[in-house]
Image (cartoon, rainbow, N blue to C red; front, side, top):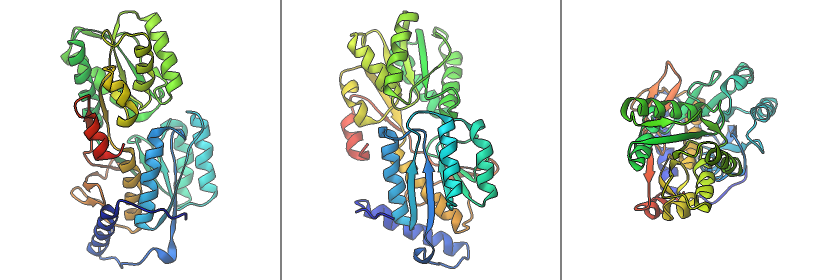
Length: 341
């Protein structure tokens, strides 16, 4: 494994201490990893975008902390078939742990069944309804995450007018769960708002979300709000809205990386951003994998190293902590400084 200098010494030390305590509490031998280093390969939705670049940093840091050879791969475009092939490659390599941020839960289910049949631990993120997983790790409550973004959009729109929603793909699990929660909240609380048309895919790629926005502005001239689930959705839509000087007419809020969104937030184009740290998500995936490899007992209130106390839903194979971040023009700089995102 390629070693890197890790500036997050306190979290690494804390991770080692907490993990050791959990293993001891479970009555297990505190065996070092050095002689039996495990391999974890994480397959993400797309490579080379800022979101997953940050996640990779967390995966590497987690690997250093827990003595797991942690790597990351992803397709060059948002393509479930490519993702399946990458998962198949990792099964063939006989990795100990497969991490996954799924694009299409139905398409991936058969190959994950083969992974588990081969004895591979499967840790997902953004995959609470993914069959074939050992655990799904989430840094937020999905319903609350969708609702709070609808609240922000409604406030900026004056609770009236048409809006559209962007997701990564129409099969991306959490994006569509957030969208469902947002729409349900709007229908219940903001009767003078209206979803102009069905949600649009493309929010994982800037070019695609730019093209979608051009089509929206042409086909739905009464739209006054854009809600983007997918970190490049607000960026792409914001670029077009800014180019056409429509920022006073159209409100944009959504899931986005602070440093990437800063110019558009400072220009008043993106009104508010929401996210959890993809770096922390990567770290948490490795932490949970390490605990699973050691046979630790998972229960609500346990400490996930570096993440804090977790809620564990064993029946649904879900481990969650509350790490939602919100930011706007007033706190964008302090958010970047505090998170490094």
